[in-house]
Amino acid sequence: QMAVEKGTENMRTEINKLREKVAEKEMADVQLQNELARVKVDTLNVTSHNTQLKSQLKRLNEERDEKDQLISKYQLESRRRNVEIDKKQHELDLLNRKFDAIMKQRAGQGMDEDAGPLEATIVSLKREIAEKANESAELQRVWIKMQTELVGVQNSNQAMSEGQHDLRARLAILEQKRARIASQHEAQQKELANTTRLTGGLH
Image (cartoon, rainbow, N blue to C red; front, side, top):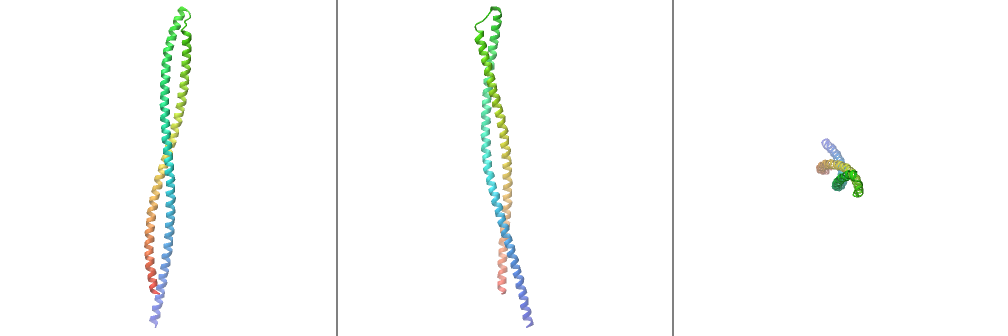
């Protein structure tokens, strides 16, 4: 009878140990599930942030292309104005030479009828050249402003690309972590099932 009682006591101790083990496994399983849920939430947050960055990057690329086109347009217009100024300046030089020749003749022969209209044309041309030069300067100013804005957009673009790269790296780490925790969870579930089966057999 002593042997039976001792055997029963040992059985109880074994059952209690197994129950404790089951409780520990269940607690560990809950912790793994919680960790897995946290990783899933982190993954969703990173994916969402990545999507936002993609959208912002697309908008910045469009803005950069738009500014590139505007800069090209202003450069072309500026070159055209400069060609016009050179042409007018050439005309003015020719008229000035002609005017000087008339003035020399006038000194010897009195007034020349061509001098009046020619003088007026020279004044008009000088005014046109000044206007074109002002327009060209304004175009240059706008072009410089656009270039500055473009640099700003390119810098933002670079920062956005780097941010996206970092997020992709974080996402890869989270995916690895999720896969590891899921594998641990599966192993824990199997071990828990085995331990539960053993305790069931000892009742």
